Every structure is written in C-alpha cells, then in structure tokens.
Amino acid sequence: MYPIIHILNYTIPTFGILFLIGTGSGFLVAIFTAKKYDIPTMDAMFFGLFAIIGGILGAKILYLLVELPSFITNPETALIKLTTGGAVFYGGLIGGILGGFLYTHIYHLHAIKYFDIAVPCLALAQAFGRIGCFFNGCCYGIPYEGFGAVYYPVGSYPPSGIGLFPSQLTESLFLFILTPVLIIFLSKSETPGFTTGFYLVSYGIFRFINEFFRSDPRGSILFLSTSQVLSLFVITLGFLFIFKIPQRLYEYHLKD
Amino acid sequence: MEQYSNKATASLVLGIISLVCIWFGYSALVGVVCAIVGLVFGIQIRKASQEEGFTPSGMATAGLVLNIIGLSLCAVAFIACVACVGCISTAAYL
Image 1: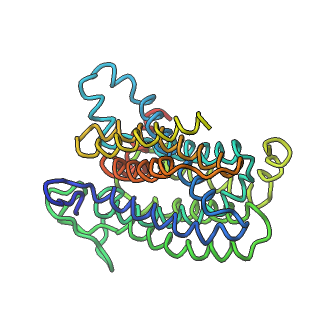
Image 2 (image 1 turned 120 degrees about the vertical axis):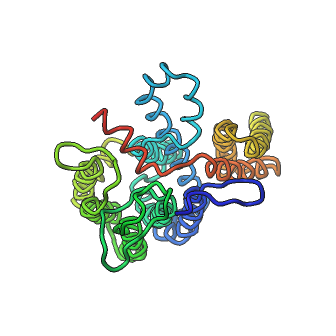
C-alpha cells in the first residue's frame, strides 16, 4: 500500500521504519521486564543488541549460503540482492538466539532468564513489524469480502481490485494482546523459562492457524506451508520449555 | 587500559563511518558491518568497566551511541520482511 515513503529526497522503506519503531519499543519494554530478575538495564540492552547483531548476521549468512549458486552465475546482481533485503528468517532466528546466548555465555549470565525478559519485547517488535508488512503489501491474505477486507490499489504487490483477508493485521493484533499477557505471566511466574515456553506455544499455534488465511507465495512442505512446519517445531520447543527440559539441560551442561 | 583506549578509538571511528555510509545507497551494508564491529568493541569496554571498576572514557560512550544509531539507520535502509523473503528463499531447499 505504502511500501516506501519519501522524506526530502530520500526514499525510506516503511517496513524498515516500523521495524525500528518495534525494536525501540521492545527495548523500552525490556527496561520494565528486566526488573523481574533484577537484571541491570544495561545488560538487558546489550543482550538485545547481541541478539539483533546475531539475527542480522544469521539472516544474511544463510541467505548467502542458499543463494550462492545464483550469486556465482550472476555476480553482477549479487551485491544488489544482498543489500536490498535478501534475508532468511530461520537464519535470523537461529542467529538471534545464538547472539543472545553468546552474550550470556561470555559474561556468565543466566541465559533462560534473559530469554524470559526478551520474549514480551520480541512480541511487541513483531507486532509493529507486521504493520510494516501490511504497508509493504507482503504476507497478504486469501480473497475475502467480509468485515475488514483490504483492497490494495492497482500496481501493488498483492492482487488489486479484490478484497483480501487482513492476515498481517490479525497477527499484529494478536501480538499486541500477547505482549501484556506475557508481561503478566513474567511477573507472576516463579519458573524461569515458563514465559518463553508460553510465548513459543501461543505464537506457534496462532501462526499455524493464521497461515491458512494467507495466500502470498511462500513455499510449502507437503500440504503445509513452510511457516506451519516451523510453527510445529516452535510449539514443541515451547512445550519443552513449559516442562522445564531445556532449563535442566542448561543447568547441567551449558551454564558457566 | 591501553587496549580499551584503542578499542574506544576504533569504536568511535567505526561509528562515524557507519553514519556516513547511510547517505550512499548500497554502502549501507558496509555501514552495518562497521556498526556491528564498533558496537561489539563498545559493549566490551562497558562490560570491562563494570567488572574492573573503571569509568569508561567519553570516547567509548560516544562510540557506543554512534554505533547504535548507525546500525539502526543503516538497517532501515536495507531490511526487508524476512518472514516473506526467507520462506521463499528456503522453501526450495527444504
């Protein structure tokens, strides 16, 4: 709808701006969530920065690896592809987790507690990111003519002239609701890792269902979309966290 | 302390480079790399100051702040919805 906005002579991607707003809001929430485990604000910030650095590097490195054959055959377009948004979600996710974990490992901090304080911030950042998707026109929904149907203008990335289900906005709304719920769970919970588990399970289930209402081309594995298969892994991991299995493994093998 | 002073200088310089890179299109990627390296230096100095009990220099603080701003602004220029692009890119390889 508005994939780019013009400020003076510069074109700025709307997704990038909303991603930045989301990240900033996430850092502000971290100031409050960090108090749960008496984590210094500076440590929470640095943990977030390491996770973001890990996420950026992971997304780009995995993108480089999977696109290496096309880069070799068309080296002239490689730099453009690399600079204009080529990134792999799984790489970003794994890189972000490893980046955050690296920070806690280097400075001998309790990683599970840091993940707990980070998930409400992540949910809020994702919520803003999905509004960015809405403006960008990506992640669009199935044809739909009911309440809240979205009509994209001619020339947009999604099909124009027909009503589409606002799948980006439903996910954003869910994440905006999930954020305070996670903060409440974090403040009430006595078990490190429970909030992380709850986030993974709830987001995984919602994402799995929401994928049925999306129609953008995004790959599939058998009869499920790639994101749905990923959601199943995320839900499983969430249940493991709720049953304290990663926490035990961390205490015995990885701590210090 | 010598190593921290050098790292603070490097962090500040990298932060300035990353801020300059914002204005030159595709060089934003170079800016991201510079900001990441500068940020790691800045964080190292901050943590060392906590553990060893010294006050980080103004140069180190300025470097940290500039690198955070540089990373944010450079990332805005080239970041995209990874949830979409990522799935398209990887689907063929799964």
